[in-house]
Image (cartoon, rainbow over the protein chains, first blue to last red):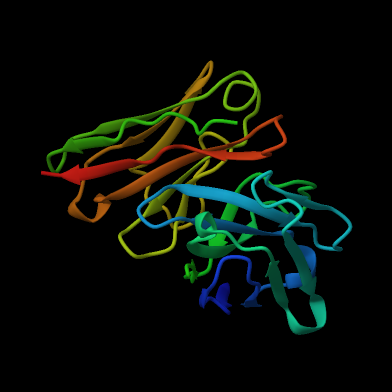
Length: 123
Length: 111
């Protein structure tokens, strides 16, 4: 069974930093691209970052480029998102999501999602 | 890149069919077949219901079907059931720097 479990969410002050993790199991993590998608309270979904299986291709949404960094560790079957220079508008539940197609070279569609981890940015 | 446009709410009685529209542009929905639909129950993670415009993942009921015409994609839920009450989001690959754009979301209510 495919499982994605996020962790690391917390309350942080504006300008602060945080590192989110996503532990993957039940599939060959090394062969799938992965994504982070977030959802602000009461709002819709927003894709924010993609990393290919080999980490050779990385993409970010304009709203987080330059502040967030995606990475992965195949030995630990884990996906990460480093959040720096956090803003109030970054408050959201952050989901990791598996890319549907193993041959995808960019973010397209997401077949499995974790339960999410809440990041709250507030003073 | 603006979000894809969906109706805020759609409702129907058990056993009826409903259709949710998702309108974009030629740069996203109209230009690619990477249109997907996600179901999200309150407080839960999204679940993939339709991918590549009209394909259902294994385990998804055949009461869910997808289609596309021009810049508008649609999700149809037939034989509506109480368990279908949830928020539904469409998404599409886009040629803009956003890469993936989601819809505004539709709340489905089963009367």
